[in-house]
Amino acid sequence: MGRNIRKRRSPLAVKAIAASAAIALGGGGLLWAQMNASAHESNNSAQNYTKAAAATVATISCPDVGQKLTSVPDKAKQGVAAELANLDKQITEAYSRLASTRQAQANDANFVQNAIVGPLKEKRAATIDRIRIDITRVGGTFDGSLAQLAACTTQTTNQTTAGQGNNNGGQNNNGNNGQASAAPSAGASAPANIGGQAGNGPVAADFVDITKVAPNVQAKPQKSGQASTGSFTTRCGVNANKNHNTDNVIVAPGVTNGAHHEHDYVGNQKVNAFSTNNSLLAAPSSCQNQSDLSAYYWPVVREQDGSQEFDANALGGGKEGNVGKILTPVQAQIKYVGSPASKVTAMPQFLRIITGDAKTTTNGLANANAHWSCTGFENKVQLTTQYPICPQGSNVVRTFAFQSCWDGVNVDSANHRTHVAFADPASGVCPNGFKAIPQLTMRLVYKVAQPSIVNGQVKNAYAVDGFPEQLHKAATDHDDFISVTKNNLAATIANCINSGKRC
Image 1 (cartoon, helix red, strand yellow):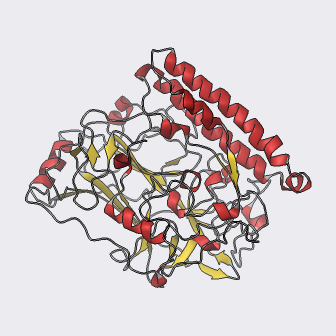
Image 2: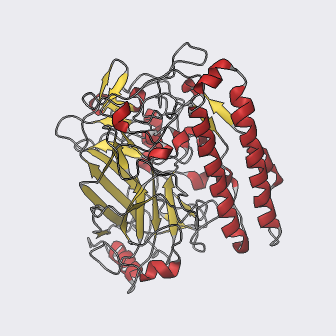
């Protein structure tokens, strides 16, 4: 990921991050020792307050090896994907151990290093070496510096803020634009406010009253004479049939629970870790246009109301800190739009795109592309690092604007990023070597109980599912897509957009 131009976000994301990145993401994470314990046994259902507990170490931060792998031979891809999934599993297990050994940590200042971080480094080193073997034995080249990514560190509550990590786009702005106060500076005395129904977030600082945030939405680029001004809307439902799983066939093919969190699926109805291009083509679709077999999937949003969902005792669910009532969107709009600078090329069959980053708490915000807002505020305020508290009568809105530039050759890349890119936020022009494709946009609307901050804690919290060590931060929101079409639909979408029609 050495080329910054390929990390460029949509104009909306650039402005949103610049406006909110100096704000605290909030406290650390502490899973209960019994993560699959009944939520009703541990939560006052009459009050629905999130938990708080003091802890020195909030979470474990490990370098993201997958993002550094820019070239993997085809013959090594399956093995490498499995090993990258092992790295994720190792982190979640280490985080679980961190959460269940607080007394031992209090009794021994070296416990975390000796019993958790040290052994984790050894496991990661062995896994990275297996990745090296997978790549080199089929004639590929392995960057030996990746071995240095084995070591993990710990983060305190003060470090799990938006100002940490690989930030850019004005993210060191000291103003808070009317949002919640930032976390205390390093060295300040502050308890770890570890909230959430499962004890690993969110916390009060993860929420902001949207009516108190200054407008931050950037104007769209001016359209050129070659602009593609049409749009194509596909109606695929809201996942009312509750098609869920914790797999991710893009990043962890063949690995059950590769995502470690629950997804909603619309469009293609047979997406799991073992899906193939052929199986996707043969599957039914929830879309009205049955030629649209594309897979649209995103992490679920949960209302942490103390209830137990169907996955309360399952991996990816309660056993990994994803708890509470799964909310089905009341609206889900999927629309393809054009480029302000040029005509678009039809999407290639089986193109895979991931937008956003599920690991921003530890990776930083370089690839963040989360947009949170409220109905009635979408044209004024978009948040990246906090969840909005919407006024009465207004609903929570998540929007996604996917990368709209394609390298013209590859339907995927080793790190699932470098084959696509964002257009320049000011001009809408794609980077050199890339061509404009229809930009996938998604808008999800949710009815949630209005959160409130009481005595430094959040009541009626909601949060997006995620890896347990990511502490359910708003910035970790992300979305996944596989383009699968029949009957020349991809060309129809491009033609509609290029001709300026609304289809």
